[in-house]
Amino acid sequence: MSMRISVIHGPNLNLLGARQPEFYGSDSLDEVNRRIKRRGEELGLDVRILWSNHEGEIIDAIHDAREWADAIIINPGALTHYSYSVRDALTAVRLPAIEVHLSNIHAREEFRRHSVVSPVVIGQIVGLGSLGYLLALEAIQRIVDASHT
Ligand code: DQA
Image (tube, rainbow, N blue to C red; front, top):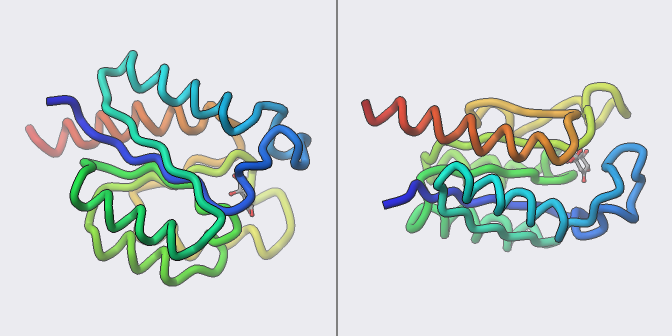
């Protein structure tokens, strides 16, 4: 059976392409998701993608991943910086997770430099645009594979 990866996009990421392209690039979320799907297929992964503007739905998606997924890739948007609920959900499901940010959050406003999620994920990929999601797929596959050997 293929390894199953849940990719979760948080608030405002539906505006990709239109929203501050200097930080987030000019591709729409659909384009980014197509790329994620394509890379997932190349790697032989079963990838499900969810986007929501609502914290509770992000938390539900993390809980659902517990039933379905082997690992999570998440860009929590601004929830990254303050949502202890998203952090607690990630802690509770005990799945390996990678945090992705399109922009380099460490090179922007002060409030973006801190992630409340980082301590409960394996690692963080920032500043590489949509490539970050593709690298996260490869990384999580290797990490999960290594944990089975
Ligand atoms: C973001 C960075 C966050 O600070 C911001 O609130 C976002 C997007 C990123 O992908 O760079 O919505 O997570």
